[in-house]
Length: 235
Image 1: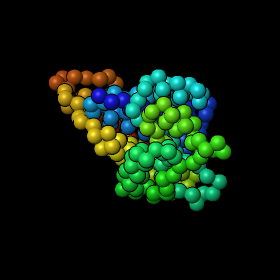
Image 2: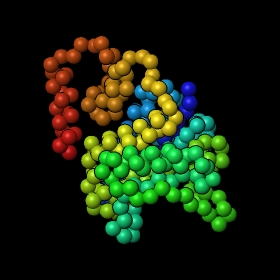
Image 3: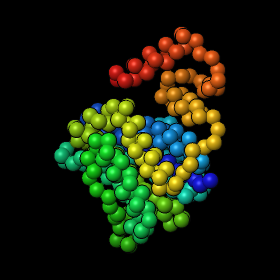
Image 4: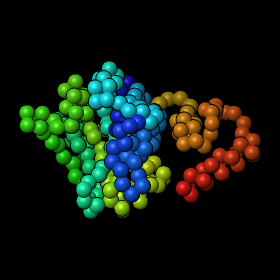
């Protein structure tokens, strides 16, 4: 069994990018939790840097990742730019790694397939010749493949309209998660097929408690779940 860390960017007092009624830290949290739930159905240990709206210093974020000792760390972000014309998804990977660029390519292709424009895959170095982004520089140096995903620009009206929709965020999470599954050749967990679905329903607020898949459901409970689902789809 391998290990994957999902790093959810920003949080708390660190809002990240803001634009078109969107706050990056909130989108990151939604997508990150969806990816976590998606990967939890596979035979891999999954960690996450935050589950709520909390602030993490750079050092604290790196410590959480490195203490988990994952094989792969994927940081979830969404972008901003001075120009409202800038749009599309970007994926950043370690400059000196000839392997994780395959994952970067797969993620961008998958995101493009759900309708978000593909902007670029790139690396960036600082003046010392090290990776610019600390979540790559300080993670990759510890023998962990490190990727940063920028899922679109909140400052672009067209990207923002997509990112406001819960169903699109689920598509984005699935696009990233499925690329990770293929990259690491992950296999589904052997066990009850409903476990991942129950966790996802709880995360989405459709049910209040996690239930056993064999439990009976009343018509009243069924109607409540459907009503909550319809409310989410109409948001």
